[in-house]
Length: 501
Image (cartoon, rainbow, N blue to C red):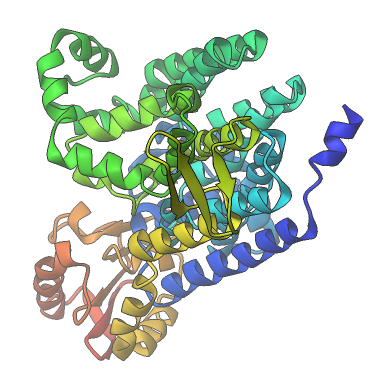
């Protein structure tokens, strides 16, 4: 065991990758926030909640209107309040997110080495993890607690394979605390460990904890703290209006489910999700091996795929958001399994020609065909880079510059909000006013009911699209309302302050 642990010590390049990725992720998300492209949903929600936790106040999100535990039961954000005690700033969340996403590199490399890949291949797999489009895209999309679960899922798999029960239990408990729906991923991971990995004890632990937590949060914690059903239920209204009802109708209405699964939207989503790793199947085919045994690590992604496919909300099937994040670990694990199978095979019909290509010998036809060597580290990295450029939101970094004409005016406007009074603004500006008990969006209140607000902040030149008209109407009404004063106006950026405040 000590020898195995020594073999899994990462080379310095892996540590450098973690540091470099952390810097890139943090700078990118911070740039987005600085240029006023982060949003109240979801960065503002978690910034406000963590701030209130750090102040010893009840973490009731004014965006949602109920206690934080009623929102996915994500208790894992509570420790983040300690960071806000040092200095309350939203960049802590962005830094935590960047670190967690980058840290996934370490267990990914270890899993590749444990499977039998050589040093260069393992590093290439670690790089392909960082270049997985969902990883970069979710880093740009505000903050979500499930990013803290991603490295923990990889650690749980590694711990199960190395038979480290303490680290396995610790990892899955942390995953369960990051988002309620991840309990389904843990339960299905347990099924995979029990059935295909021959880790009976580990599998049973994951199954029982996953099912137990799913029942507790959906039938107890979330309804108790929110006063309503799980928020995501509304996205499956055609199947029912409760978690239990949806689960029953999944069995009673197979035709509806099948229609969703076979739709073009679903096929496109699954194709794009698998595209970064689909090339890993080809080496298995080239060596005449069965592919199916190497796809069993995909069993834990079934809940993620099903939830995203059946949702009435189309952006759940987009790689730009966090909904596919739980699948990444297992997609990479399947890729590692395919590459390891080819590396360890004893069939000599494939002859290594170079680091870029191999020659496939077909004796029946007396042919030797040069084809890309999918096992080569350079090919792995090249493919990952190409897919990242195709599906990663790198171009968004340049689109953020479109609102520079009002950037300074908006920064000045923030300084005119001098108290902790309630703020009404749009989704694009809300995350800059969340260190207070009350901040809401324009579409969350009636124009004639502003009693809970002391400030209204608007950017009429670059508004949030969904509330553009509402902002114009509200600004005109406030200009003619003696209870409000226009205290700042520059480049179509306005700050109204209640006269009495």
